[in-house]
Length: 277
Image (cartoon, rainbow, N blue to C red; front, side, top):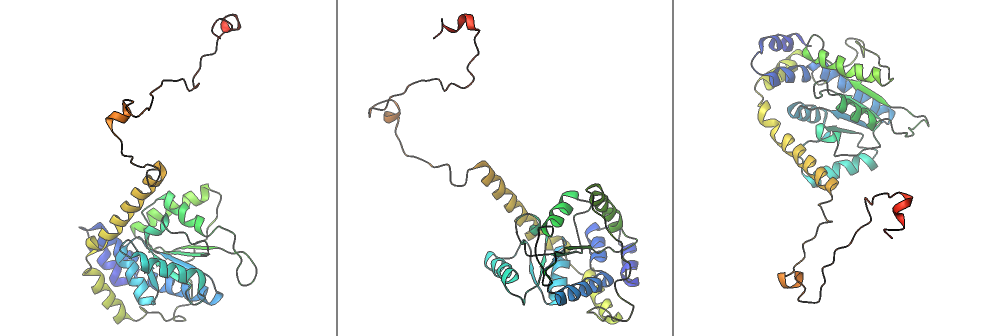
């Protein structure tokens, strides 16, 4: 982490969300994400940048001039961004929150950059990894998938990352820890200069992290409710029908009859089978 960010991280003891935002919005992590995006865009890859923190998601998207989707994004804007990502060679990056874990399907993506995640969730790791494992051809005719998790060292983020890495190992995957993506001074990003880092720190310290997540959580609950509704078959299969007590009692010629469906019939011994025919 940048020195000033790490100092504030150690000082912050009241708000866990604010501490998390400090290591997610760490300018060194931001520059690493910026470098990876530039590298993969030049290759012609399709990139998803995941951030569970909504404030950080907006920060990355606006500073990098990329489209983003979170719980508060309208349906029309969401569909426009997704269609552009799927079909346009000019739109190769979407920044997306945890609503993309289950409710958005983007098989075209072959690169994931994860800057913020849900603690040590193995389920989330599997969902995101599965997005880029579908076979797809790149411009050179090969098949490639890249999954990056950017971690601020010496923070709680390392503990959660170790749990998620252990899941990958248990599933038979391997991973590589890279500490230096580029030579110092060889890449200049949005927050390379100290004065820009201090301005970012002031923005992070004054951020309202609680309200930023309200729309996100509401959208996730709506998606979960819709999924349960579809699974139970209540969406369109159940229909109301007008009737009357007279019709139910046989006034219009309807007859009520009891019959056996045949399910659960008892097996009888051969000696008694003829008697009960």
